Image (cartoon, rainbow over all chains, first blue to last red):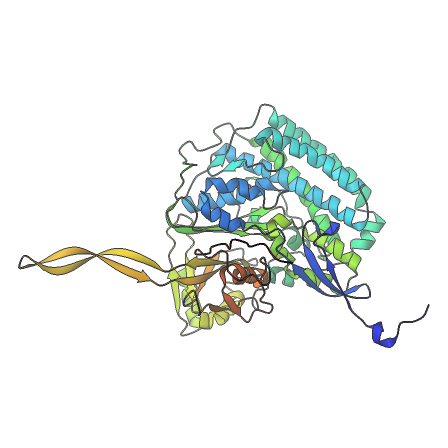
Length: 374
Length: 191
């Protein structure tokens, strides 16, 4: 082989990776500068899915924004609903019936299960394990979507929670079905882990790749499993104890090195903890109303003021900041998207790694573009 | 967590002469905010992050709010001579509140587990004096969110390492989240 002339030997190559690239999980673009195969600079480009969700919500009534929140992180519509209704409840000072609190925890943890299962499947797909892990994960997700469908009428765009409760009560036999799904999920995880966690290729590809130091993670506002994989113990379910999370016994899994493998493993362990919460909630759920009968859903006019409410969504801290001027629509409506803020340190995680590693580092951050671009 | 008044006193002890104001919040959420003096905001933010009792190491949410100029009608009692006798009478007075843009920061402490502390920074008006100091050098998490506020509200953050539009395209002219924004008839991006 003839060596290239010296002036070409250290030429950098700039590639636009995306927006139409299967591994960017949506319309996301990274401008990557490569030296050979090694990344020397990475600039994320946003906005391909921007539809100004916030402006739409500032023209709508409080109730009419709930279905729009489904479309933020379209994998986890239930937790999006929850973060929004929690903020409205804070703003207007509304109470939630006991049974509805339990239902929220149940659907919230089911959402976490299906999100993390999808993420693990997609991540392995990105590593080249084509098909099998993803399809196994999707098979389990399907059972959870069936539960959501019989509960809300829709598989992905659930539009189920309301301020002061939930839209409707559980159908007959739903709790038994959910318990069955949760039990089956545990053995699915055993099977999934036996296939993958000790797999040599997965270990070789993911260990020591995309390391995120804890100090940088905190300063850059990384939240969710990505933060805990770096060893920072910060789970909003424990810190804020919103809803009734103080009643359940569960642990917060932490990583040690903050690499791609830790981010994968923290999610697997989190699914086990979610199953523990589900087991407790499905057995303890009391009878009673699911919606406060006195609440005015349709013509809610909170007193002037503002509120910031947040929850631990599967991807991190999902917050809603609302300002009311006393009118029927919020004066200011702001979504604090975990996916966008978690991308702040993408460049630092990718520098010095190869372009093939960029794909799995991005996969381990877990983004959904509906939420990044809003 | 300490109340905003206590935090205000702590800040004043560390950053003497800074102008601070506690803005009450009437909603049941009870999250009052601190209005900072933009000139000293960087110093105050550094103090809030590093002070061992506060340690707000995590800036969660950064956003903008647009407050256009508004006219408020207020009732004031004035002394008037009605029918030769001096009397107290109510009178409607129009008061003009000039418009401004606001950047709002929600801070939490991951180390101590408290929050939120709400910081507010206000520009002088909505047209030519819209610059505020960027807090990205103190909290990296503000980087994309300040770019978003710059993009959608038109606040210029001084000291931001990479201030470009985040969501709209580069040669887009307006700021869509402002209350008086009118979409152009043809607003498709031209390739």
